[in-house]
Image (cartoon, rainbow, N blue to C red):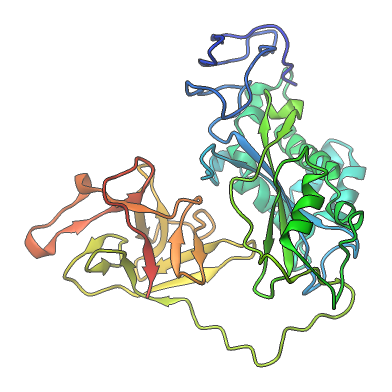
Amino acid sequence: MAICTGFAKGAYFENQQVLNYELDQFQTCPIDIPLTCTNTTPVQNSCCFESPGGIMLQTQFWDYYPPIGDNETFTLHGLWPDNCDGSYEQFCDDSLNLKQNEVVDIIKNQYKDEELVEFMKLNWKNFNGNDESLWTHEFNKHGTCIKTIRSKCFADYKENENVYKFFNISVNLFKKYPTFKFLNEEGIIPSNDKTYTKEEISNALKKNFDGKQVYFKCNKYNALQEIWYYHHLKGSLLNEDFVPIDSLINSNCPNQGIKFIPKNQGFKPPPNQPPKSPNRGYLKLSNNPGCLISNGQWYQYGTCATYQINQLAFGGYNIKSSKGYCGIDSNDRLNCNSQNQPLRYQFHFDKELKEISYGSVNQWCFDDKGKHGHGKYVQVPIKLNKDNCESPFTIKLV
């Protein structure tokens, strides 16, 4: 384990300038290393400072339709490393990916921690019953992006120790926040009749989170469904030194009339719900003519391509054209082709606004350096707006 004592290669200055911390032969880190996202100089390739994913989210679900998990427990969904601006990376290193049905074998057979596996089976639940597929997904999407649990960051690395530590630390943090208990202590209990205010729920959670604002999310029935606890991190993730911070986003729940629906009473959706319309159509750019063609590039005069947007098992979306699945390349450009793997690139689709985002970035830019063709036949790549371009736009399904 990386221990935060002594000094490491690199430098730390009183004005919080941080250079490249790399562990020396003693596997030590500076005592006075700053919290993530508080430094003034970027940190790269460090085992002592989590970057760029300096905000750690502990996420929990309340699934009542169908009912998932114990009737008096929010279930664990994951431990997510978000960037300091609220965006996030995903599926960062394919070489670290787990295959299906490896998680239990690693934890139970290799690390002899049957207690951890049993706890996960009770509390880290997948809605379709295949819990291990969710665990695999969470590590591949989020665990591979956590830099301070790479193999070189362990004093005496053992095979799959990074995997074991990811799940062990995720569970430890989840145990710190028994959300059902927090709400119950303030009289907020599941009910088919009683409703609650946003202020009541907020205060109950803040009271148990160092007075910091906790994010909670409601579904289309104004029913409580998700809880996210935001943290900065002191040193390596291996030290589990999490510091609560206020949520970076505001709750979507109404000010009043929030439902907390019981898991055990056979909830049924209201009758006469309109049928779901297929997420299929053209992709248009706000404040710009034309549309995207099948390769994912903007074309002002050509025929618009038809795109299909499909929801995945764990909340993300695939986007597909006749050329294949869409993805984001190393230059942050959108592309659609047959080489893209459907589970590798997961977009977000706002079903109300019909807008597409990636890694919590919902604005896009033209990449004029990559444009090709002449006259009205010019095609222009589009990329995520990470550099504050002059005329950003959104992408909308129409």
